[in-house]
Amino acid sequence: MLPATRRALLHRLAVAQSEGRAPSMVAAVVRGGRAVWHGARTSVDGQVPNENVQYRIGSITKTFTAVLVLRLRDEGLVDLGDRLEKHLPGTSAGEATIAELLAHTSGLAAESPAPWWERSPGSLRPELADVLGEQPFLHPAGRRFHYSNPGYTLLGALVERLRGAPWEDVLRREVLEPLGLDRTSAQPSAPHAGGWAVHPWADVLLPEPAEDLGRMAPAGQLWSTTGDLARFAVFLAQGDERVLSAQTVREMRAPAAPAEAADVADGVTYGLGLQIQHRDGRLLVGHSGSLPGFLANLTLSVADDVAAVVLANCTSGPLLSMVGADLVRIVAEAEPRIPEPWRPLPEVDPSVLELAGQWYWGTYAFGLRLTGGGGVSLEPLSGKGRGARFRANGDGTWTGLEGYYAGEVLRPVRRADGSVSHLDLGSFVFTRQPYDETADVPGGVDPEGWRGIG
Image 1 (tube, one colour):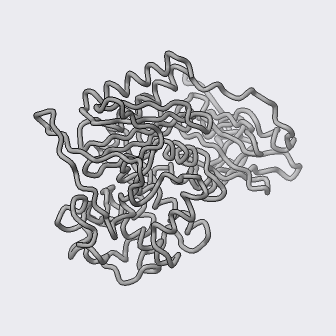
Image 2: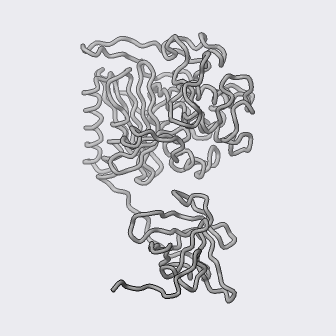
Image 3: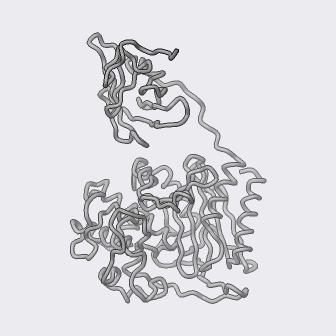
């Protein structure tokens, strides 16, 4: 990384620590599958934390729990559409689906009943009923995004039921050990930072308690380091067949919650265990976390191949989601990703090649282009409208991967002589000419053809 980029990163971190009045703040930037920069600022001379010092990461824990649940799905043990009652009977929230719990759309309350769970022992809530309370639902299921810590407590209990082992043990065996995250744990392991509250009107500190969250651990218990979270960011970008495939982590990064008006304006939504935001012209995914004494953020731009991790040991002050997004932006703008060299396709099917080029849906012009792996893309030539990439099905058809045409089948329709009449896409007819009279256009084509008005 260029010296000017490193200085810009350190400057952003230093401003955040100073203006946010954080006792300490550490950060890492990831590119090309590895950490390429570490930075730290501290209020204590001679005690600068490094990439191996643990901080509590709060709700970033939820992303780890989501990984465990998606492993169950990929193994066929659950379906995301299953109601919780099917696998974890007896709770008062059994009507919620697994997908709704992952995406915070179940309608469950945001917090457990009093006392404030983040500052009280988990032993006060020994059972799921103690976490859910008497009225666990506040909203109709699936109607809105409403962040829920009890929801992820239920997902952790689901993991325990189906694996027959404590959540912490399953996490260590199935995620932490395979990814080499040996400095991530449910309990703090030296060296670790202490958590502090900073007085809002004076530069003085108050120690914060570090409670064991008990049943609610899957929602926010973990401690980790910038080094470990940098490796976890690589996994969230690329996948790892020992844990989750690249296809499944892409699924985690896709929006899964309905956005309200304010969310649309702010460009934020939620996937399956991941927060999603559109900022500075780029799509960012990751998660923030907070517990008394600690703040944490992991931000990833897959398109730029840049991720940032920022950790601080204060209850409030610095907005780490903004810091993480800025660290990504600094690198992406100062040292933009160099694309791979263009290379021709290794081979091409002539019957597919003849489909390339211009097509019309009525009078709307589209271009069909061949892509890698036998796929195709269909994009509006005006640059605006419904476009999508399609994956090959192996039988001469393609299935849409995104947008309006996600899941829809694209099929070339041939005449008796083998020539292509038109493309059928979910019943829409695409022809080589606008309303081509030689194609089977629904409603027919006026036999007098195109005309002017005198």
